[in-house]
Length: 281
Image 1: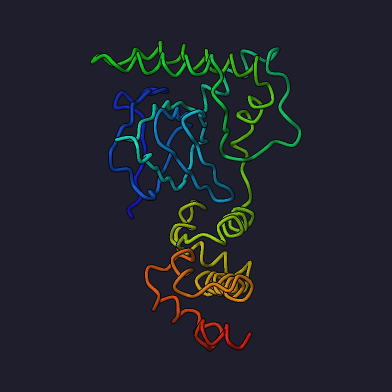
Image 2 (image 1 turned 90 degrees about the horizontal axis):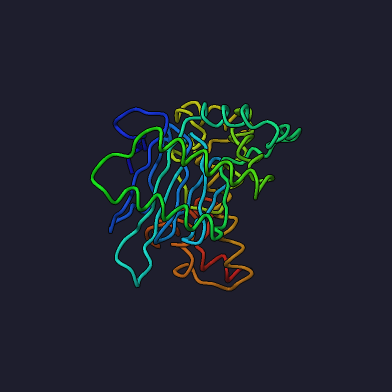
């Protein structure tokens, strides 16, 4: 899986509205968001992984993602033919300008900001129609005038500020920076039970692989590959011991493509095969 950037439109403007439609969405892609992004889902399901958390979005919802690195996967419902969403990119400068101009409406920043890099909202009747208006604007062949895009963004922010004041404060503060050590810890703990790779963890932390490994070793006193293997096998042992499940029932759930690789990893940590481990416990 190669890393790639989702960039705004070719006009290099401060906003960009794009229709994204595909019949073959990637299972999991590395995304470098160069701007903040609203995703209005029309069909399908999207899951986004960040360093310290993740979020799943469905068609009755929409999400704002802060600029930065993430892993993104999309699913198509069996009864439908494609994945369909509208993407609305915008610069952080526009967001800062909005809060400056509407200080009386938005109030003071929170003292303890919520630093989650996303905001998930349900679509109410207004937001359903707002999404339809974007859909209609994209139906023609002509590009959407840049000032009109900014008006639509202003409309959305104003509505959220009036109807969802708590959430608009979350948008205001979601770009709060965390220390490098905290980012590593959040990435590891939030993905400990997933089949995410060390390379993907480094990407989510916006670090080179060598930098991530060095910081990981300093924090945990072990290499990330060995530490994650031990934690994954601890989970496997618990499943074998408590749930009485067989190795061929759990290896894929633990991120292995085949049974033999899982058995080899299990023996590396416990010195016996999963079957022998079950018999001894």
